[in-house]
Amino acid sequence: MSIKIRTAAVTGPHKVEILELNTPDLRSGEVLVKVHAVALCTLEQRIFRGEIPMPLPCTGGHEVSGEVVALGDGVNTKKWSAGDRVAVRLLYNCGECHYCHSGHNNLCERAQKKPVRENLLVGPGGLCDYIIVNTSALFPISDELSYEEACLTEPLACCVHSIERANLQLGEDVVVIGGGIMGQYHIMLAKCRGCRVILSEVDPERCKLGKQLGADIVFNPLEHDPVTFIQSLTNGRGADAVFNTTPIPGVVPQAIAMTGKCGRMIQYSSMHPDSPTPVSPQMLHGSEIVLTGAISPDERNFYTANRLLSTGIINCKPLIAKKIPFEEAQKAFEAAIVPGTFRIIITD
Image 1 (cartoon, helix red, strand yellow):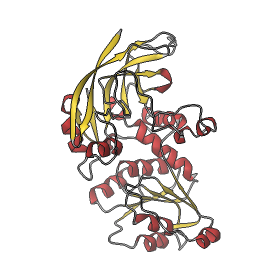
Image 2 (cartoon, rainbow, N blue to C red):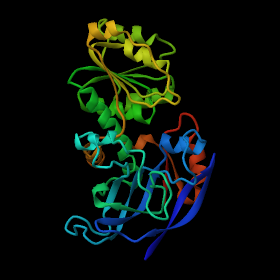
Image 3 (cartoon, rainbow, N blue to C red):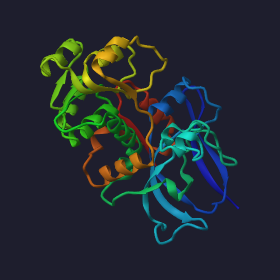
Image 4 (cartoon, one colour):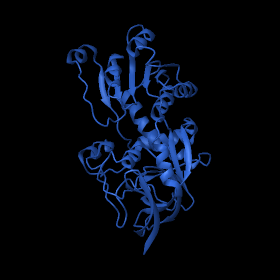
């Protein structure tokens, strides 16, 4: 027996089509989820623009929420039932490599080699009207949380991981560079950790939103020298933690320079194309600055993000730009790649 589904697949540069597929029936431990909302991340946008080489057609979508509609054999019916509202973790980890076994499954050696189910397409796989997943990928959401909000669990989980990498302490000075969705999430999370948060952003509307979401100070780096400005706010010490959420190579040396002794600089955003930055070994030796990155969340980060949204501690409503129906997926992708746009969400 097979299950008929539809997918909004990228079939070429700047082209999306609705395709019909047949997937095998549920296996033991699996459930069928009716997808209600999928957010278009930069990954999907880059595939759409043709910047990331992928076999086409490709099914994107890894920021997903929906409703359980059918249970396979072996599913714990005391925990799961039809009608359950869930956020879904679709990022793949093999569970058997060094990083999975050592508690770092977000760095899984096979993270980019997700097995493709028979008759389905390559890619994260969430941009379908129905998806089949193991129950380990399900995270219940509160009745008060909309599906549109719930699909933003995954990007929040990425930022939770980033914040934890920085080991923020009460009263620390934190700089967030960039006021996009990830920067705004960093602002809210850093405030949860009891920090003074400084946002560096050129767009007035994003600066305004940053203030609304908790930033104590906002400034335009085109109007102030960023390094000098941060030093002036910290008695010349520099920030305790700096998060670069932008993909702008020229910002990286500034982020390092504004980090104070014993500070942590987190390179959150990916760089496409990459652009290496010279670093002074003597500076590292004399300052004990930690330079590191943050990529993808593990299950614990996802669980934390789920709780933050479901309890209302984090409000992601201001980060939703527009909701567009599944049948208009082409329009959704075109809207998502417009510079400065927050999350575009495809709904059922």
